[in-house]
Amino acid sequence: MTRKLDPRKAVGYVQKAENSLMMARVGLQKGAYDNAVMSSVHSAINALDGLTTAYIGKRSSGEHSDVLSLLKGTLTQGEHEVISRQFSTLLGMKNESEYQPTLMSQKDAENAVKWAERILNTVKSKLKPD
Image 1 (tube, rainbow, N blue to C red):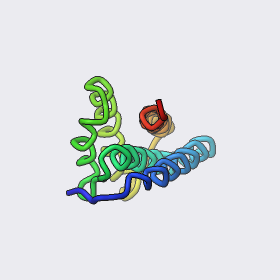
Image 2 (image 1 turned 30 degrees about the vertical axis):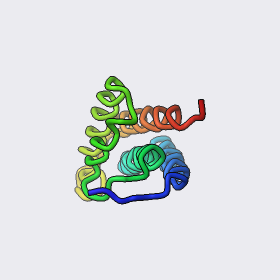
Image 3 (image 1 turned 135 degrees about the horizontal axis):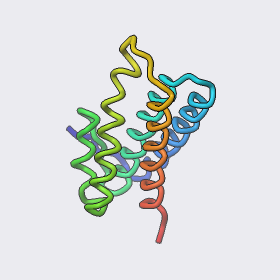
């Protein structure tokens, strides 16, 4: 499922992605590893929604992973493969970090922040005017 949006709204998603990433870094620094992972996941979700909103005026409104099919026209094949791997791994951490009693480790948080940073950096590079 997708939802149509004005492409000019993409900037709001990117700002939310940046804010979530900032909070993920704080969580990592303070030892709040679950929150670092949660914020990393939400950063990546918002970043990718920003990219698809900017390029095709749509965002995924069903499963979070649906955004990967929307991205095919906005990324090179190599970029798509890398982002798909990173994003899928982050989504795999979402349930455990948000809803399960198992605590995330420092390594989990470090990886999540790293992947969210890479996703956001790719998105921002795609949104820069040429």
